[in-house]
Image 1 (cartoon, one colour):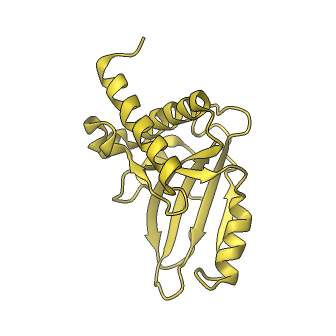
Image 2 (cartoon, one colour):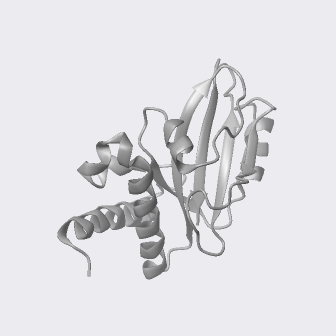
Amino acid sequence: MLNEEQLKSEHVIEEWMLTVFQNGGIERFEDLHIDRIDESWRSQQLWVEGGLAAFQTAVRLRDCHKLPVEVVLGFSLQADDKKIGVDFKTLDEFAKRLNWSPPSLYLFGAGIDQTLENERAIKAGHVCADAVVEELDEPNIFGTLETGQCRLYTEFKRTGDTEYCRSVLLQG
C-alpha cells in the first residue's frame, strides 16, 4: 500500500508520462526532473535514491498503461575539458560525480538504440567523433535491474563546446 507522498509522486509521474506520450513530447525529449516529483528530492544527497525510485515507478506505470516506450533515467555528471571515462566503481563514488542538475526521467520510442543515435549525431555534426556510448562494467552499482534494462555511460563534446558532457542512463 502506498502512502500519501508515494501516491502524489506516482500521480506526477503518470500525468507527465501520459502527456508526453500523447502530445509528441517524446520527440522533443521533454523530461521530468525528480525534484518536480517530490520536494524532498531537491536535496542532492537524495538524487540517486530518488532517481531510482522514480525510475521504478515510471517503468511500472508504463507497463500498467501498456505504453510502447522505453523509460530512461538520466544522471548528468560533472563535465571536463578532456575525456574522463567511467571514474566510479561504487554508488558513493558515482554520487560524488553528479553535476548541479537533478536526475530526469525521459521517454524514448521503443527499440531506440543509443549507439545508433550516437552515430547519427556524429554524422550530422552535432557531436565530435570521439563520443562514447557504452554499457557500464559495474553491473551491480545501481542494484539489480529487471531483464531488458541497461545502464549506459555517455561522454561527448557538442560541436563548438569546450567541455565533454557526461551522463549515465538507466533504460528499461
